[in-house]
Length: 207
Image 1 (cartoon, rainbow, N blue to C red):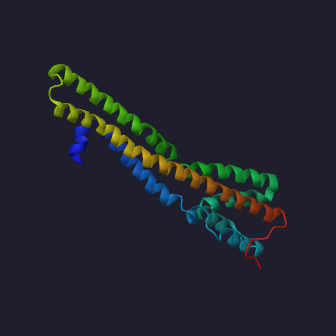
Image 2 (image 1 turned 135 degrees about the vertical axis):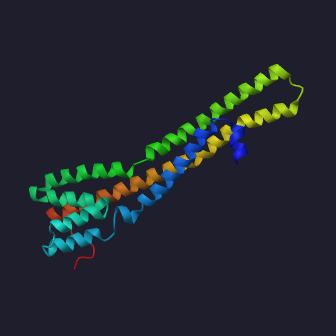
Image 3 (image 1 turned 135 degrees about the horizontal axis):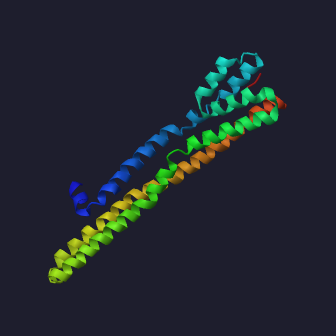
């Protein structure tokens, strides 16, 4: 592995750095974008129980806010509910915008890595081919083995760049789809809370 990195030249270093950063982002996003961490399934039922029993005080609101991104949105809506439906919807929208921003954290960086890694690899190959042609000018084409080895080394960075870019792009698309699905679920739960407080909707599991 070290020999491959050395053969690829100095541009292998930023490609290697990109691979480390991409791997760290993928691991962190898999951990952070778990469905139960973002939208606990029984949070709405718990809130409804506290509302129905008139037990929703400041301490419980603070607890709801700390539980999850969904809790942060719902807590903002519950605090603003006393001012009417429009203010509640506005508070939910503002809190939701912040939550969505947090859900998309590092995804732009992952997408950037997917874009620049093959370009870095191509740049390394261009430099390598320039060196090969310089060797041809100095030594001629008599040594086919030397020529083939030089071309092979020149292509290492392209292969390395693509090796980093392809999985980075796949995970970037995957996390984008996951964020979209989570945002839709957060919106549905938020609308449900508004309808519970200002409409006739009931919570699933309510007796």
